[in-house]
Length: 364
Image (cartoon, rainbow, N blue to C red; front, side):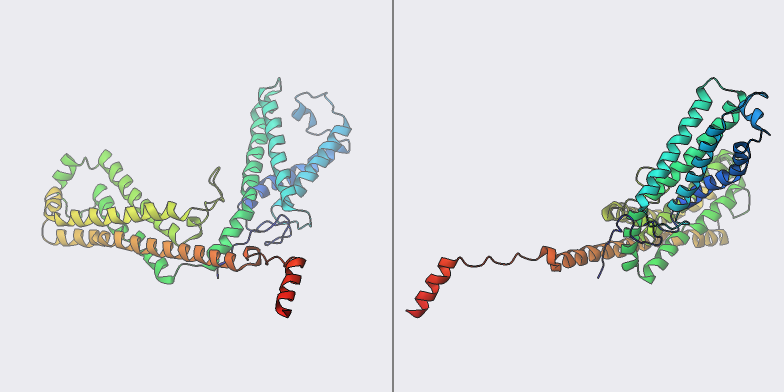
C-alpha cells in the first residue's frame, strides 16, 4: 500500500526542525556560516575597543564608530549563524522549521539591502568594489538556501511515495541500456571528426562535411545532444523524475505530473523507433555518403545498430513508469475510501413518535 504523508511544520523528518538533514540548502548555508564565523573574531576585537583594520574598512584613518553599533552587529552575526545552523539541521531545536526558513529569507533580504547601499550609495572604493559584491553574494547564497529549505517538506513527502513504489530492477537496467545505445555511434562520429581513421574518405570528409573545422564542432554537439536526450530516460527510474530538483528556480521541489513525463517519453520512443528503422532501411546511401567499403561498413554498423534498441527500451521504461504511478493512484484512492473520514455518516435515530407508533403496531 502506498501512503503519502506530508510532515507538518516542526514534525521530525530527519531533524527536529522538520528539515531533511541532506537538504539541498545546506551547502550554501554553510558557506555563509563559514564567512560569518571567520569575521566574528575581528568584529569582537572591534567591539572590545580595537582599531586595527577599522580605518581601512571605513575609508578614513581617523574615523571611529560607536561601540554600541559594533555590539549590535556582533549580536546579528551570532543570530545569523544560529539561524543558518538550525535551518540546515546541524543545530537541532524544538522550534518549527518554518521559523528558520523565514529567518534565512530575512538574512537574504538584509544582505541584499546592505549590498545595494554599498553599491549605489556615496561610499568609499572599498565599499563599492569589495563589500558590495561580497554582501550581494552572501545574500544570493542565503536566498538559494532559503529556496531549497522551503521545498524540503514537499520533497520529503514525494520521496517517501517514490520509495514506497520503487521501479523494478529490469526497468533500471533498461534505462541505463537506453543511454548506452547512443555512446558507440557518438564515439565513431567524434573519432571521424578529429581525424582518427574510421574508414571514411578524407576527401569526402573535408569537402562535404568540413572536417576539420566547423563540421567538427557540429558533430561533437550532435553527439552530446543525443547522449543528453538519452540521459532523460534515467528520470523515469530516479527521484528527479518524481520531484523537480531543488536547484531549478520557481518549480524546484514540486512533484512532476506523471503525464508530463509519460507523454513526451512515449512520443519520443515512437519517433526514435520509426526514425532509426527508416535510417537503416537505406543504409547503402549512408555508406556512399562516407565512402565506406568492406570491413569499414561492418565497423560502422556495429557502432550504429544499438540505436535500434533506443526506442523500444525507452518505451518499456515509460510503460513501467506509467504502471507504477497508476498503481499508486489506485492505492491512494482505495486507502482514502477505506479511511473513517470518507465513510458514510451513521443513520439518524428514529424520532420518538415513530418509535411509539411502531411499538403499538407490533402489540396490535
